[in-house]
Length: 223
Length: 244
Ligand SMILES: Nc1ncnc2c1ncn2[C@@H]1O[C@H](COP(=O)(O)OP(=O)(O)OP(=O)(O)O)[C@@H](O)[C@H]1O
Ligand SMILES: [Mg+2]
Image 1: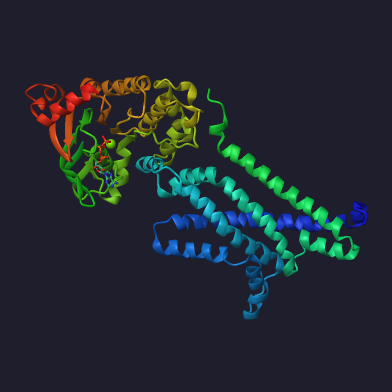
Image 2: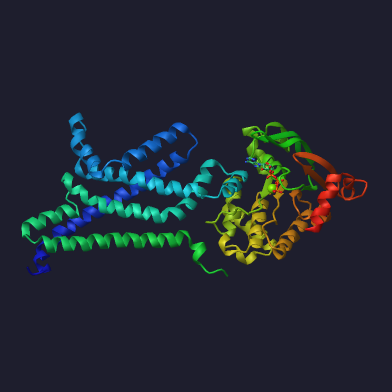
């Protein structure tokens, strides 16, 4: 068998559409996952028992069920009880919910690691709890949790390939179609491999930059 | 007036403060001495509302720290400087100083920053306003900590062993600033192990022993043979401190 990437040229536009859809779904789910992760992390570090339990239950639940099962439940299960959600929305929401469970862990660890002395200094200076949270707790927590959050985000991108199973033709979905049209699975999946690697590499690069920026006080020379 | 009346504080079965009375008048500098574990930090933490009282009352200019409604006012009137600085690591020196004036006192950013820069300049850090805590030495961090407290224009400055984490050179740079504040009329409640320094700057010295305020005397009397030194525990403490 010859390795010939030129056979894919007529399909590049089609594959690019898939890549774009993957990027869009992941972009939205990243935002959704991080916001949800923050809210849940706040809930899990709150002193309110009930709020705490609910948040912990959410995290446990969604981390202990295979993503594809969650996805099928949302997409094929819910219509049985009259709830219809289109594939795109289902994909974004399911990915956000699953990602949010992991993201909340990363953010929570960052919150718990904050030196209590710093929080006491903020408290005695008269800052409101809200202000302390927004200006001190979250920014400090994010400094330490960007890296673990990055792994969560990369996992979300990888997981998004499963969305082709609910008729959402993101990158993997499109690739499957091209593979069966051209009978050239080797070339098709080789390209797929490279594109996913590039996509996740870009994200980890972004995370590294963000980490540097949030921790710039530790990297800049003392002077 | 900062008033501590019959204050009791327990942790579980341990009584850490046992009926403490203390009054600090505006303009006064009062040092708190006492051996490790005697309850000095706990007393400071009761005054700034970080610990809940189990008995008695603390008022800062008549605002009762045990009443949630009044605590905010009480806190506006006192500023705390911590042993381990507790600066906000993600903010520059200037941001550390201006955060509370802007958020709590609703001062304009420009005004808060002007004042913050002036404060930094007054402690010899005029050129380090944009530095992050991690880029500063211990002594510099504590000077920022002092500026952060002063930026709120507190009536009472609470200081808990603010030089204990510093080496001698840095200690003296911080003590110089406190001496200046003391002579400038800043009211201070000052927990310290720097006996000589306490003697120089204080109007009064109190001695805490196992949660009880054993001695409360004008500085000169405290160190006089017939005054504080007449108390065996005080004499013992002072001679031990001088040896170290
Ligand atoms: N959160 C707490 N829980 C239980 N016990 C505590 C707590 N905080 C303080 N204590 C105890 O209260 C006593 C007084 O502590 P405190 O920190 O006020 O002493 P201190 O006079 O400041 O001592 P040092 O000179 O070592 O700073 C100690 O026996 C300490 O173990
Ligand atoms: Mg102490």
